[in-house]
Length: 399
Image (cartoon, rainbow, N blue to C red; front, side, top):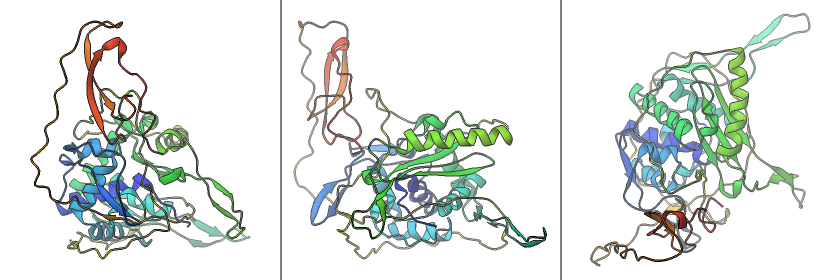
């Protein structure tokens, strides 16, 4: 029953709360403007996205872009997200009602995540996970039986099936493509700050599996004896999702389920100049001990809950516990300056060693390599096709 930060695997609960309140729509869009936070008295930009304009909810979730998730929780209200997490999705852990909750900075158990994702799997019902089916005495007599509970219609069918379709996009064209060979797979990846936790919360029509990877290392002080260590290069989509897929495919060998067409919502837009998939990570540079907990004044919208009629239910698993991070938003001050216009690219000049057609490439303003979603400033250049930079920016990323 240990608790860990779920990182971006918590984002579906934020967006789903938005669907229920009407602040967001599965077919809609969300801001991709830069989002700034105040940490330890300093103003910092949230990494991941923030290039401006709007992005579809489908793309924001499939590519696990952080800035839209922060704007989403602004739209919904952090207190509303906490309320839905508890009443609709069954979380019992204490969750901070602050914007960084959108990036999974609250601590939860794997059993809670299993119960929460069951709402999307079942079309709006929630199943309570449990670990012991029955207790048998020495003489073979059954001393006790246990069963999960089913809570009917904790979420509207439209919101639950909408999120179900979006989580399918994560597997077919997002950060969890490594699990796409599993029949009817849906789910969400998550990687926490400093790579201390790597998640994949996934399910099929019949089974839910919550995958978590951590790294306990000896504590030099000895109290506690072990602490969470970093795992350089470990991401939920690159390590945990493949692990989940191998296990789930073996389960489906024993309990096969028919492959079916799962409806898609929207179209996942990827940067055409990007050669490698960008993983999701909760990346906020801050001291974990620097906590700010401002009073949240969002109006609370009551969830549409009917938790009566519990019936028998489903399964789950457990996880470990670590400290977290809480931040507050800082809005940009209003400006009287005229709107800036993007300078046009200069006309291409002839000559040079290269050849081929000119192509437009978005590069990082700092490294001049191909820009990723983590590059804070980008520019677009025109170069001959065979001279275009091929490697992605080495300076900015989910570190």
